[in-house]
Length: 136
Image (cartoon, rainbow, N blue to C red):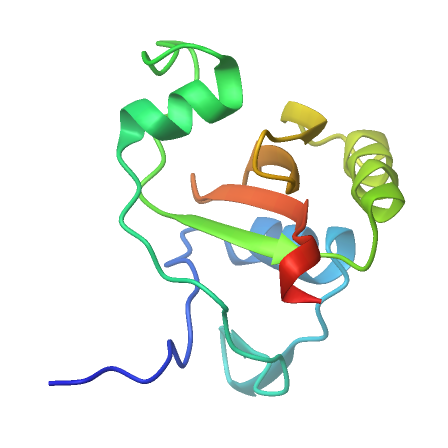
């Protein structure tokens, strides 16, 4: 088998209103509802990377420790949403914070050159708002 690209990725939601508010309102993804409760956007480009990310590495990248904090829900998956510039990552963090979301990691330039920030979605998905220079 040869996988060409990831065609889609998203959370399994338990609170539709919270999910719509986060993904649609806070992150600005236009959502359609072709059937009741099923929200979709089929016009976003696909992902540039798919990876199995060990929790210890996600914890290190987010909190600076290989242990995930006991007071933060353990995520079941991750997604990174790339923005146009480094400044746009900081702007996104400010918007998300102003909207009442708990940002786990402010905009930070990683040793490999990517600028990342992280928070958890209402579903417990580890969300990175990033700028990845080599992907632009």
